[in-house]
Length: 325
Ligand code: ATP
Image 1: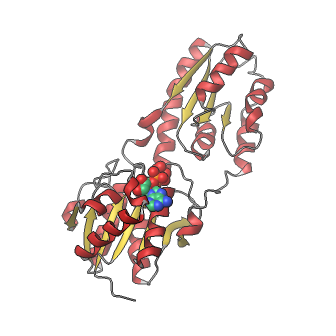
Image 2 (image 1 turned 60 degrees about the vertical axis):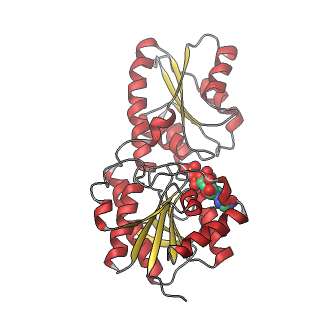
């Protein structure tokens, strides 16, 4: 296997708090191992356009506490074409980059997997997504911070819901995964969560109303996973039509969920994964995502990590059900 002298780092897809902590950890750990570091801006777009700059340890000073990503991020359609990836490879070679570390979600890691197979380039993935929907790691970078942000918002919504005696449907992010909705519902003491993974999805509203908004409870909060068809608006409309006796409101938390300073957990996770990525390269690993499972750093083949079938534990659904009586 060719010796690695220089690594490239990029962040891709949706930004997530803690990405900067990961960039810092990768950069410093690479330099400590006598590797050169090239920062690639705007995800795969920067690889195609050659928006690349060498990093020293100073470039990553004072960023561990900052949300977003100093490398910027983008969704790049051109990288999904063989021609786009060929351009990316040419630029990578011209810059002397021998291996690529990609921090991103499902799509970004899939892109890395395809690129690595096409061009025989060592690629390492870091799970950088607020959705927590990657297999093989207990958590993803940004998930814990976002969970805390949502809980802070729901606590505030609870005050007004309670004062006006209303039902609030609070829509949160998660793409096709219900981790954010389910766990923020537990943490905020919400009455229910409507998530894509629950097989009783279609009837979740009936169940919730059927269980009764207890007489002693004068308000209710339901966390809903975003969905083009069945989001918070959809459920609020249904309650208005089917249960007109209730006063219903919707709150879509939107992009504020992505922002803010990363939590201590996310900073530690990102730091460990960043150091793990360089360690993996030194061990000759390629095409793996670095994860943490049961508090141990693990290497997960990217093809397994992106399978999109990470389950929300049934136990979590039960916990919420029991505690919301
Ligand atoms: P998040 O989970 O936060 O949304 P993500 O990484 O899943 O992040 P996507 O928009 O799915 O976000 O993917 C980000 C980028 O990864 C795409 O814009 C594209 O550049 C690249 N990518 C995604 N899928 C592929 C693919 N099949 N082939 C090549 N590149 C891809």
